Length: 150
View 1: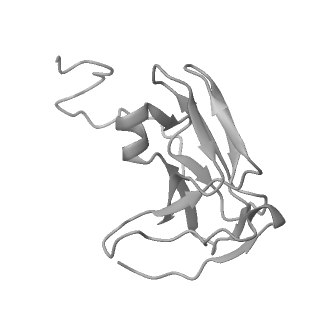
View 2: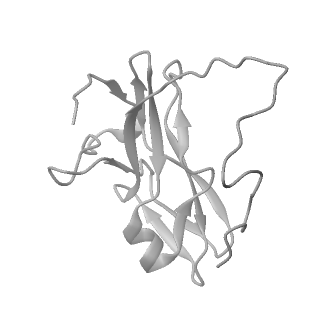
């Protein structure tokens, strides 16, 4: 793994909460916590935008990816919409997590709960070029959704 310096700032709402951190030595993502005043309930089928109280300055050429926590998904059906969510290097606002409840029971999010993972990742920009030619063929061709069967 390569280390990259990411400057962060905690808002007043995150006061007293630990900074995002990697929970194990080999973890790719650091856990983000809910910076709530109290508790937010998410009913089945409902989505809620949960604040983390964190702002950051990513170096140019990097992005932050918001990803679900596997334990919340398997135990409660809680995941993220638009996942992975992208935090661009030029964004300076508070990081918020869009949780959705795909489970059967209402789920309560409390202050300090670990609600998502943040992965810092390098970005490669594609240079698009329109060319009047045939695209190189592949075995897959134009096969899309479900083309390989079950």
